[in-house]
Length: 260
Image (cartoon, rainbow, N blue to C red; front, top):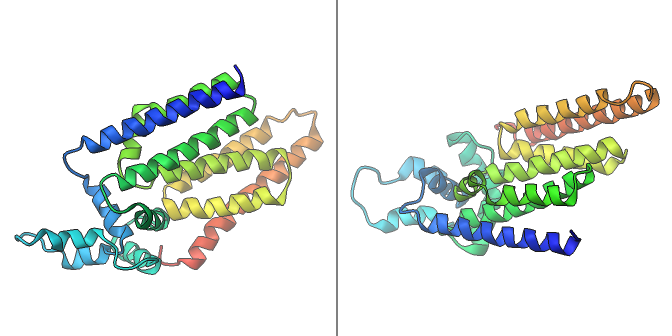
């Protein structure tokens, strides 16, 4: 099977995935609570929602609708402050959603479409990763198609939350870690630092992912043939530097955003 055929299959799967996502989103009779909270946070009105929302009384719909429309562009400081004070999630996804709704507008489809784009990017990263580690073109294509159209992915994309962004960053970290282990280049360690910061700014549970990646790196080092002492030493050094790069990334986030 040639490269052009693979691209064709993946393109059809991508169109099918986005189509199924739109059908899933449009068929909903109401927007989920978490999706509404994400949109309110991204517009910079999370503080208004908790402090001044007109609960338990009849009001004009406009009083609720204003919470879903941003007053200004670039209010990242307010978004971050409100999340630190009133929520348990870090701000990166909501910053991205803020930019997206200024481009695409606010609607029930805004978040799912953004998530769909992130999922397409994740699929591309994973496809290239598994090809790099030796999986056949057909096997890589099958895995990518499954990732795009399975029910769990569609359900994750349909909710305006940060899980698809976390998936993209995780896939990127694994890819960069593989490159760092195979080829000693400062760029990969810088990439690990940046992606570790992004992961920690996306979801605090990314710490679990980061530990698993670190564990995978060390297991890979342990499986270097014992006769290749020099290679084992090289891989160990690269693995430890990579883990240190991840630690630096997390430390930078805590230094810049000590209230997280």
